[in-house]
Image 1 (cartoon, rainbow, N blue to C red):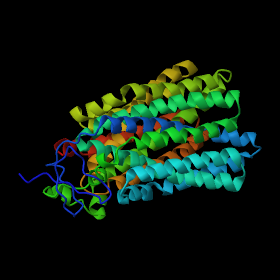
Image 2 (image 1 turned 180 degrees about the vertical axis):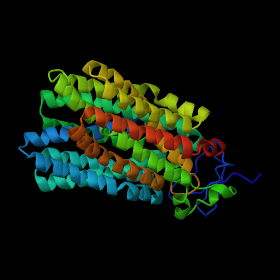
Image 3 (image 1 turned 90 degrees about the horizontal axis):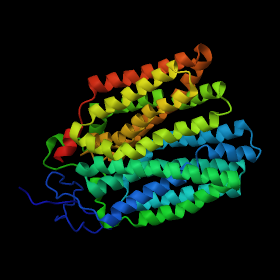
Length: 438
């Protein structure tokens, strides 16, 4: 067997636990490389980076509309700003992934993006005028486009393909905990102080986010592994080393279509259900909707690590099918159940879907793009499909609800989820084999 070797970037030191020789061709020998052993400091740093980043991103959720309304903005102006951010976020998915694939330091790109988002939050708080807010919305969306791929790349660079399932489960847990804690803190600040305080808190939270990022040791992130480079001796993988080879992969195209159907079915369900709850129980609607958000987040936090472990044992397809099945059942139950309190219990199925896909989307992309050197661009492709599906979902479901009623709209969304289940069952190949042999 050939000696274990790995590629080096000029500005990085070799990982101490891997004996390697420089190759100069940018290709990583996954099959013969020693198992990565990142330090506890780096792994904990990644945990807390994800936690605090979720805190920061939560500040740009529904709080924007509330804050701008208090600043005497019209709903048209608010909608325009949100649309600008949404369009930039959609267009930037693939370029964001390509930037991470080309980066020599994922940490530096992530740090720059976090700093940008912190400055955007400060701009919202200090200068709530249209040009400033619109520019901040564009910069925030652009920065967010590189953060998702950066987290996945850092994770892959630290733990390698075989450790990716467990790591992604842990990532999902800390992201879910961060979202929950941030929502509570910012909601309290908004209530006790003002809606402006939410964005000042967001700006302040950017600092512990950057501190946590600095705890991840640069030398332990293998640059070739983070970009998904190929095993030189593996001809099946080496053929994917070009971008064209990646785009010809049936698994990637089928999975992107599956994620499109996922978001087409899922994105409109909670807003549509919120409208139904409000008409049936307007007094308790805010509390019920809050529980509808908290229940799935709690399930994600509790079960995501188990999803990663099960994915290694069962493979990817069974869990993908489980996620679509839970979404199908949720849509059907929303159509049939009329008690607002029972609707909250139905959100358990949302937690199952969220826990599965929080782990399985980046994990399956890592499987499919393994060997191409374009792992993060592949994430951008799938992210674009997800964004298009989510954008269409609210429009189509809203039209169906207004024209035919909420029952028909929910059954239609359930049917879309069932289509995704059939697609995965019939056309999606099992991708976990490659990661287990890497």
